[in-house]
Length: 254
Image (cartoon, rainbow, N blue to C red):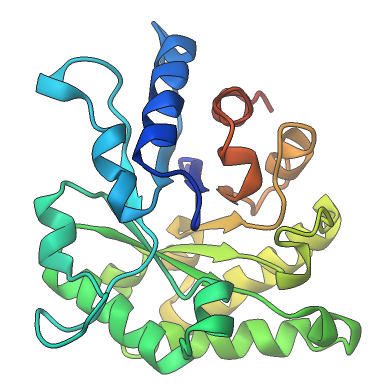
């Protein structure tokens, strides 16, 4: 049985002070609450410390990085290494988000290098994002785009490592636009994505690997999305910025 995983991606939002306020509010909401899902928040690196419980007291928030470099160290101004993420205790890292691809020249090849580096040199779980643009969606190229990104992103990875990756299908036309793929649309593409994983690594890996939906998931639609047999969680943007909204996502009921 695949354990659901919900990750809030704050993107370039919330400095340390706002993050501290979020922590305090979420801690109150989560008091005495036990979750049966995995979850994390991908905050800007400068705000991470505000989400950490001091002296092992208070709410423990699993943390994710929004990006990582595949080299161990070096002259890469503005980048973070896996050793740095591990030293901070991060548990997940988002790789290949559409905004990294669109604005910062991320390619399938660099995604693949980052996935391999994360699997080979850390105990951090990589979350590999993939998905089509609005034009590709309109041109009915969704499945070919998804196939290419999964094939290239997971190229050269052994099956035992592949099942540790979390995949996140994010139709780019549904990110930050208020538009959302219908549960049926999301299920169809994610089921197809799982079939690609089966072709690459076999049925066992395909059944174990978790695939999130990442396009405007919010409290109003999470139940219907999570009822779909192949959707294992969400990579959530805007709805993760408000503590009450994020809490509702973490405590959804099928």
